[in-house]
Every structure is written in structure tokens, then in C-alpha cells.
View (cartoon, rainbow, N blue to C red):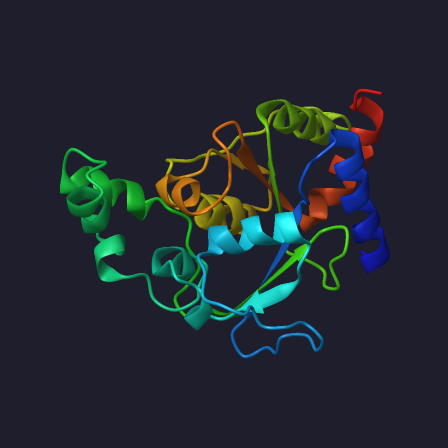
Length: 229
């Protein structure tokens, strides 16, 4: 897929859905590979969800290394280093956040979180889809439920079927949005998590859809047909 085509798809999605912010292109750079020349390093450490939210609002393009990702749980899920032991065991969610009734319930949930192998990712690239200078692995669209509905209908326009997804309100933009979409190669919908809704400007009436790059043409083509005129 040519970059110009990807950029055009991004602009079409914005126009069809009347999005107020950009779809975000995300690329996982495998360990040992170099970041493309011309892309700047992010200027301050932030959480992955904050980086995504910043890009969709400002139109910036940059990359982040493990050292730039403040949320080590999200970074670990995406292969930037190791998952912190207290996150991996569920202890953080049980003892600190108190969002599970037992340690076993917390661990059962975290064990099911989509993850990449530890230290398998060199860096993560972020850009607005309509201006990206790299071919992404995943596109994150943060928008309201009606717009999620239209994206779903657009994807199904060609062949029908259903969108099947999974989420737990934990590690939402990192694991659900990026890793699960990347590993499964299918559209994922997620609802945010305590971190992403605390540290970003994602509003209470917004949700997240992850779209693998291979499905972007079908989604964009379907939107042209079903979007309200």
C-alpha cells in the first residue's frame, strides 16, 4: 500500500465521520531495526495512551522508546521491555487499584491480556493517519459510539459478518487497541481503561477502535457508501 493512498484513506475517514481529531497510525518497530530517518523522538516521557491522544489532537509525528513510555505495563504489553512483576501477577490491580475481589481474579484477567514477547520491540512510531510518513501496523480511531457504529458497518459492507472483540477495561489503548489488533489481524473495539481515562483528554462518550492496516482499504471504501450525506 502506497503512503499517499494511506494518507487519502485517513482524510476520507475524517471527512466521512466528521471526526474532530485524527485517526492515529501506530507502527511497532521490531527489535534490532532502525527508526526511519526524519522522524523525531518524542520530547518528554508520556504514557502510550497520552502519546496517542497527543497525536490525534496536535497532528505531530514522533517515535518513543521504552525509556519514553511512562506506563511500563503498557510498554511491556507492546514488547518494550518486561512487564512489571506486580502488573503481570495482577497484584497492582488487586492491592493498589482494588478493582478485583481476589488476587486470582486479577491474575486471570491479566493473563488474558494480549502481549508481545518481552524486549521484542525497538520503538513505536506515532502519526496522524492523513499525514503519516510511514506505513502503520495499526490505526487507532477514538470517537463516539455512533462513529464506531459507522466504522463497523463500513467494514461489513463488502462481505458482511460480525465484529467480534474482547476487552476488560484494562490496558485498553496498548493491549486491546494495538497488540490485540496487530496479533489477531482483525478489528478490535475497546472502551478505555482507568489509566487512559485519567491521564488523557479522552472523553466519557468516546470509545476506541483498532484497525489493522490490511483492512483499512475495506473500511475506507465502505465508509464512502454508508456515511450519512
